[in-house]
Every structure is written in C-alpha cells, then in structure tokens.
Length: 328
Image (cartoon, rainbow, N blue to C red; front, side, top):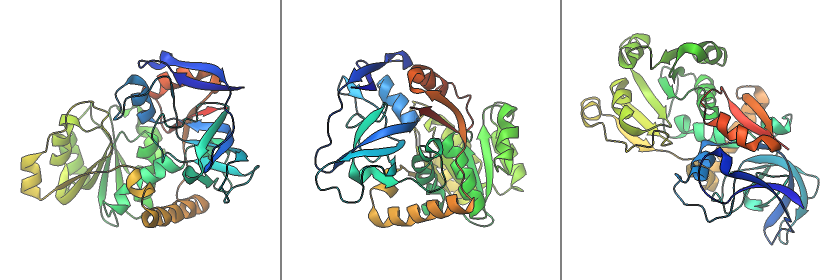
C-alpha cells in the first residue's frame, strides 16, 4: 500500500485526501517510481477546483511533475532501469496519471533522467518552468536590446523567464502587484520591477525603456488587463499569453495592436514537449543552462506530503517567490 493524494470532488485545497492505495505494477510502456519530490503547478490547483480545461473523472489522481527513483519498468521500456533517478514531465493529461503520492505509475514517454547535480527538490521543479518560459526565446525571439515584460514574475515560470531573458541578452522587467517582492526579484536577476498596484504601469514601462516599450510580454493572467499590457509594448511587439489566471475572457486589444503592429499569440508547454525536434533543442539548452549556472531553479518553500492541503493553500496565496515543492 502507498499513501496517495486524490480528489473525490472539486473545490478548495481541503478536497485533497490522502489515502492508502495499492499502486500495483506498471503496464507496457509505463514505469513505477518511488516519488521523492513533487513540483506543484497552478494548473493542478485549477484542475482540483474544477476550473481546468478538462473536468476530473472522480475520484481522480492529481499531479504531473515529480522527481524520484525507478522501482519497476513495464514491458517494452528499455531506456530506464530500477534505481535510475528520473524526472516526470507533464506530458500527459491531468488525472490520466498522478504523482501526488509515495509511488506513482507514469508513462515512460513522460520521463527523463534527472539532471546531474540537482537535488530531488530541484529536479522536481525544472522542466515545466523552463520549457514554458522558453517561449520568450522560441516564439518571442527575445534577444539583445529587447525589453521583456513578465507579469506574475515571482512565479516559478516568471523567474525562469527572467533567467532566459538575461541569458539571451534581453532586459527583463518584472511585473508584480506590490513592491514587497521587488528586492527578491532584483536579486534573482530582474533588471527592473514594476508594482502594478502602486503605479501607472504603461507610464513606468515607457520610462524604464526610454519610451520604446516592451517588445515581448509573457503573460499567464490573460483577461481585460491585456489592454494595459498592449499599451506598454513597443512597435512590432509580441504579446504571449500562456495562462488564464484571471478567469475572465481575454479581449483582443484592437487599437494598440493596430497602431503598433502587435502580434498576440497563445503559448503552452506542450508546444515544445509534444514536438520532438523542438523538444530536443530546448532540452539541450535547459541542461546546458543548468550545468553552466545560467538557469537555476528557485524554491520558494517545501511541504511534506502530509501537508498537501497546506501546500495548495500556499500555492494559491501568491506569497511565494519561486517553486512550491512537496517532499515525500
């Protein structure tokens, strides 16, 4: 028997229940891992609450980013052996598999060797954030001389975007609601910090960029605020939306887009993860960045598995600077 977190109904963090379950053996193409650390994602909180793209089939497993050790491999799995340290990538549908627990069965196609030199906590936090934030390079083409505006900059993906921007020679501008996170964000590589609740964001971004505006905006919030973001952009800029934390419809910012010839596009992790050529290129860069120190996962706080409910409450509190990780 293994301690596993599941949901039997949608709702707040309290619907997460720890249960003793027999995990069993992996089927063909799968492997079973002993979970050491779990990286939490906001999409999991949305899934738990019933606000995700796909409604859970209850009771449902949950979680799709982890680090651990291979225990058993299923038929046809040749790339991994018992004892291998691995990372689980979120390349399956939430609820189809789940890693919130002491053990997990996952598809072998969703597993990579753990990057050398990282602890289990760090390894559990790497792939989702860096492959998502790679969008500013892959699609945004951020480079030398560009200003990159990063809303929700204290999130794990926001910090990853700051690191990518610095690596390619762009100037990251962190956007956060209040200035109490400014010191931490500057220490983590943001060149400037703009507190949206304390200033006129458009005027401040224009001031920081000598009137040019941001050429790339990397936004996980969506909703009506995209109008403000568009007004803070440079000509021929690209506004990338990779999340919907606002929970509101996202309008097309017609006039700023028309006047400045802006592009607005969506972005998700799977654009990289589900395309072998893109994935191979991005994986190579992530491993190189980790090895050379250009990319370094930032852990906001850890919780033991017994406190999975408290971990989700903290995840949704927006207090964190970096990744929230659950240890097993």
